[in-house]
Image (cartoon, rainbow, N blue to C red; front, side):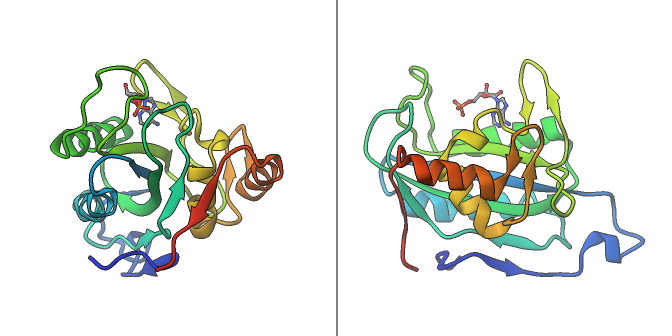
Length: 192
Ligand code: AMP
């Protein structure tokens, strides 16, 4: 896969265009890595994520962003957001994301430890500007409970979904604007 240079969309015909297509849901997944060759890890993880998308899914990947650790330790993170359509349920998708994390050798020696790869299910069932499913159980919270607080989510998310609204939290644009104004979280978009 080629490196993300700026937010890109590769489009196939959407499932809604095909009456015979299985039901699918638009999802946004956040990627982060701060150990080893983080760029190579993100590139490989994006390939793995594509395997979770429906055959007819459109596919979007943000730029890559470098961010200072937030409530975490270690070197700067490399972050991105991917969006695609999947036929998996929210919990089945979380299972698949965690399997990919494990494949990339993520260990959890303690909370917020440095990680080879972190995958967060940010939003599920997005339709237009509507941020999709709201749920909370012992395994999964949607929208992701900290997405609205993190520049490394909001900056790449705004590239792909600039008019989006995170349920119960507000518009991506306003949330990102408030974070930028605070200047609390160092982040920069990497050139392509
Ligand atoms: P973290 O170590 O920050 O990646 O958190 C992983 C834990 O958060 C796992 O136990 C997940 O079950 C839980 N979790 C809850 N909601 C989400 C979500 N939307 N995306 C990913 N993990 C989640």
